[in-house]
Image 1 (spheres, helix red, strand yellow):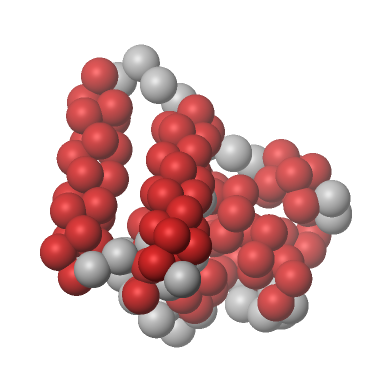
Image 2: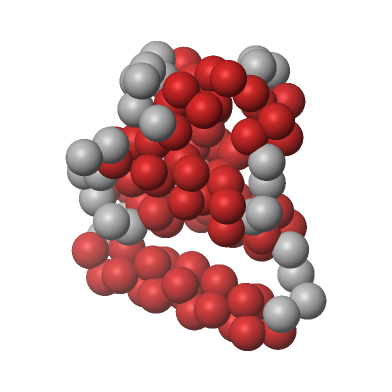
Length: 133
């Protein structure tokens, strides 16, 4: 099974992106993207991180370690209490479902919205940790 390649292909096709387009975003040739998707080459850590950032998912999701693509938005388990983590994940999922149901937002824009929300949550956690120190 080629989890990394399958996940990259799935994320790319959900956005109707070509391999050429993803290659441009990664500043590489289409053939590299094709090699990743077909499992001929496993992307190095630096590229996996870029791919995760582009699609707004965690590297763990790309590697198949979790089926929760939004794990990236809660970057450290100790940043939020268990209850806060559950509420944030629920909020992210519901927000994504609401935006998708509207049908008038592109996958790329949706990804940017979710990335921004994750950034806000991470900043909030950082401020919370600083004030507790």
